[in-house]
Image (cartoon, rainbow over all chains, first blue to last red):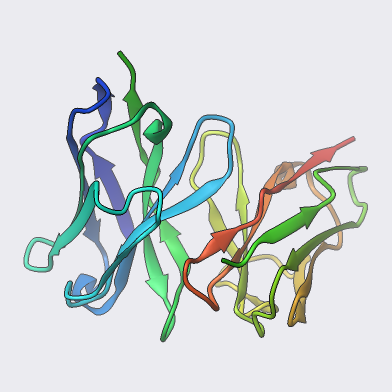
Length: 120
Length: 107
């Protein structure tokens, strides 16, 4: 069955960096766009970044553009999110999600998420 | 950017009752709308995509309708396990956007 498992979260000071990973299994990872979606404590959902199936096309939310980089290793069935110059407002649970669609995507499977806390 | 507005913010329904959730888009999005249910401490679960197609394994008590800018999610017979926050999500235009959620409570 499809499984998405995030890791790499933790507590980090403002301005520092952190890298999240999302290990995928149970499907052909290299055929799907993969997303990062975050949820601040007690708040709603926010799309952060997407990497198209071949990893060449990537897009970012304005709130993280220039600070976050997503990448994927299709040989390892793993999605990454490199988060730099972290801010307090980046505190959230970060989910990876599988995208379904032709141009843009809805999300049919989600990981449980990895908590990132940015605090001094 | 497209803004999705969900209403009501909170909905309290008796077991077996009917819940009607609304999602309004600030621009037309055709039928490129999905609905998710999120229980506390869990990841969201896909319920509906394409505005009206139930995802695999989703109960027939869930139905979606609408196109353009006005969309509805209906839960025809509410069960205790349906107590959750429900989000709509547009994937017609970049950037993808979510509504702020409707909290469905069981009386």
